[in-house]
Length: 259
Ligand code: GCO
Ligand code: CA
Image (cartoon, rainbow, N blue to C red):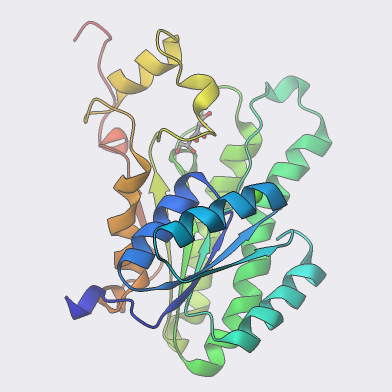
């Protein structure tokens, strides 16, 4: 289907060495895209590149910190010398689970810096290229915490709520250049980030399964279709939307644990 075809498109995925970033990258590569992966850990990058290459995907990797605007600018220049970035997926993120009352300000700042400021830095750098070409797709990876609070994740919720509004604002400013800025809000997915709260028998694990109308954790592959849609021609008139891929969590108030 040519509407969703990504042949010849180059996508930069931040934090694409594992988890949801990797699953989305694979979805896009399956639709024909060439992968450019950013990460911060050389050993993880090597493993990821081996994985992508084993699957036969065209891929390159770049180690840099998205919160360092000078380094990020140098890498965007370097990548663009090899070919244009058609799609940017702002996926890199961190979480700190800590009661707000005790959270060191420095930890709060660090989460905002990676999850929100990093996405701004990368979007600005890449959009400067996209504006000249009058074409581009930017996808910000939001969260349930773009809409809902939860005990112990104040900085993460503040950052992801901010990322939702950054998405709308960048869409407002850049739609006229034929750049579509949208977001994906994953529900609760089985990744390394949720490993500490996904243990069988752990009350949080039971809670999430009960709270999700679909009755299960998301599998990373569940995100691929939405990522392809927002990267392709099929979404050329979709601007500033957050698509929640959450098994129905945000559609419902939930139910008692005995139902
Ligand atoms: C948590 C989880 C979440 C998920 C996801 C939900 O502690 O509540 O880790 O933050 O990772 O972002 O959309
Ligand atoms: Ca990373």
